[in-house]
Amino acid sequence: MSVPTAYQGELMLAGWKETHTGGAQVTFWLPDSQALEPFRHMTVKKGNTAGQRFMAVLVLLGDDDLPQAIERKPGGPLGALAKSAVLLCQGDAFQAFVADLEGMQLATPEGRELQASDHIKRVCQVASRKDLDASPQAAGLFRDLMTRFRDWRERTGVSA
Image (tube, rainbow, N blue to C red; front, side, top):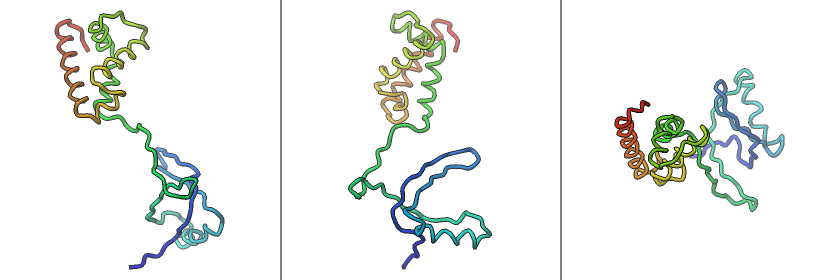
């Protein structure tokens, strides 16, 4: 079966944005105004309204015009354990727990949160709290740490 092609050719990424009213948008530059021709008449047929649907496959081209892998940077939304760890590190009770465990004085407010974060990463053997959701081993170590924290709170009478 032959599928009619609306456009086939090289594009250049112009930008992207995401808003709560407009959603996610990606904008491309076409090589010249001739490449725009297939699209000029589409909105006219629909009463000057955009919204036609297309299917696209995009491949990143390197300087040598050959396809190349896209390097994905870590990030994105935090998982449930990472969110818990971030909130935990901001709490006075967990900061006191870490200071007590490590036999150290509480640092400045900023330093306390950093000490708590470093403790979680060290105990759970991760480079970042984001890794807690990606590694079953790290998740288990984090749960063990939470059990020790609850036990410490009960023993010391420190509330959450």
